[in-house]
Amino acid sequence: MPTVKPVGARGITRRGLVGAALAVGAGVPMGITGRATAATADSGPVRLTLPRPTGPYRVGVVPLHLVDRSRPEPLAGSGRYRELMVSVWYPARNERRYPRSPWMTAASMRMLLESAGFDPHAALAPLTAGHEGAPVRHPGRRLPVVLYSHGAGSHRSDTTIVVQELASHGYAVVTVDHTYDGFSEFPDGRVTVQEEDFDSTPWTYTRDVRFVLDQISDLAAGGNPDVDHAPLPTGLGAALDLSRIGMFGWSKGGTATALTMGTDRRIRAGLSLDAPMQSQPLPSVDLYRPFMLMTAEYTRAAKPAVAEFFTHLRGWRLNIQAAEAIHSSYGDNQWLVPQLAKLIGMSDEELVGLVGTLDPTRAVRIGQAYPLAFFDLHLRHRGGHLLNGPSRSFPEVRFIP
Image (cartoon, rainbow, N blue to C red):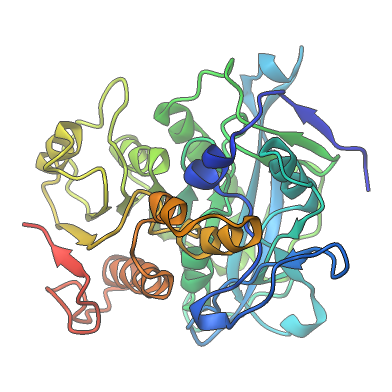
């Protein structure tokens, strides 16, 4: 393994680790996957688990290393340009020949643990449903494409439960690491973290996403945008349907979703997971394309910027909210933080302070069902009833007029 060269020295508090980015958890998997004991010196590190996606297709994934040569990056050094790591998730075939991809690279995991004051070798990242490099399965038409943008200080894997769910139902999902505003590892072993000296705003995220869209267009045209010329899964570029592109994001990434839709008409539908909608300038362009808010703490009632943004949605729009949800509830935190709590002996009171009281199993089902229903409706024109109003299957979810 190459020597890891971390960029940036700012540490992360334990509360910051699990409350803002979580990038690790260990101990007792809950609900769907059964139970396990915490790691001990004799048993070695515990590997987390993630719930399986529900779709009919197996899942593949491939990382891509991209460089935007139109954007110099002084923080990376003289003559360097903006570098991004992304992953493309997709329905796969012959997947058993290919290893399952970890939720996070081992080096990034160790750095997160160490930054939080834990033994860097105490836990192993869960294995995802994605088989790295597996050939693409073509389930009929080309695959609609969905992009994902993470929250501040986080990483592109923080909503993997939702991402692999979409891929298992026939979507290509592109997840983006926003370098220097979270944890990312490059192929040469460099691990970057959130940098105080890096002026990262939601508009920075939007510039990242628009560049990634250009690279995905190159991929669909038969090119290989990976700067290291890493091999691509068989059939990947030809499987992408660039006439059906959606985007979603958590927190800062949700704000970036709104900004990207306002500046790039290639995005046909947008979904925000509890975004504050704060930026300079604000996302104030009238949007006539579909947009859905899944709110928790950044509600229209509590946050004027969110309420103002909602008035600019001139087309199909919807605001839903799960009872007892907090800011991180729609992502992997709700599933993984309880595992971390078991490992470190966190009290029930501390755990509730981090993840609230929304049951992890119910949070997973909500996160799997509603984004899928949204993109099915607006990228595939598949009706269904889930978005029409309250559902007996999801009594926690309220529709906010």
